[in-house]
Image 1 (cartoon, helix red, strand yellow):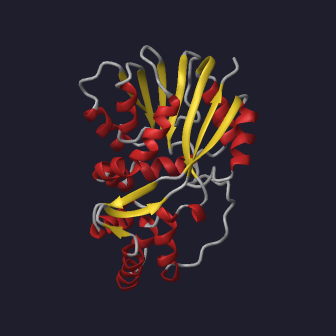
Image 2 (spheres, one colour; image 1 turned 120 degrees about the horizontal axis):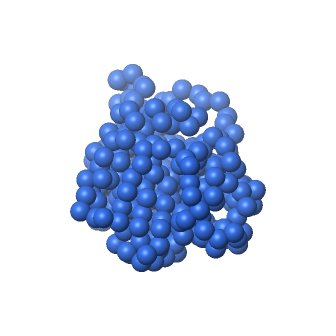
Length: 274
């Protein structure tokens, strides 16, 4: 999708669905959120930008460190939820904006993002613009998905549903989307081009619970997960068959603690040399 398409998508039904599923998403992604926030280490008194902050879970966590946080996202419905969650805090602000082209002042100490930077039309230009928001020595820290093959968390359901979905043309692996930064060499090229230094990329490999139960996991797949849009476009009969195939595939990962699958993300850190 282009940035304009992303804006339309996240301000339509998709944004409303993610608000509805906010508690599931926060719980599911907490192992990755915690690892990224620990590495970013926001400090009291710092100024921080949370890119693609969504419903505000990471913004809230950063604010608890005592830093002043500016959450930026293109989704008005999700930011409405974020504002409600942080209404009593005086060190949080939000903007409905495209972080890749927003106007910044070089007064921030940290730019953070949990899965919010993989959707830029022009990532080299976007990260160059983001660097302009940092003071000299300011930090960048974000998490992004590794390849689908390394993410049974998402790919198991996709493979199960594939026979029922229309054929799609091969896409540029670096095109905007969840896996745009799957290749760490591409990440390095983008950040080097943007003027960042000390780029460090670490693999995170948690197991994530896609639901407390199989039913909750199917809700995620049909409403929020990567397959949601494709499944919604099938006719009723094929949709039912595809969902049953996904359910059967996920049942193999059902445990007493929920439906738990391996995941893989990159934790990326860099410095603005000034």
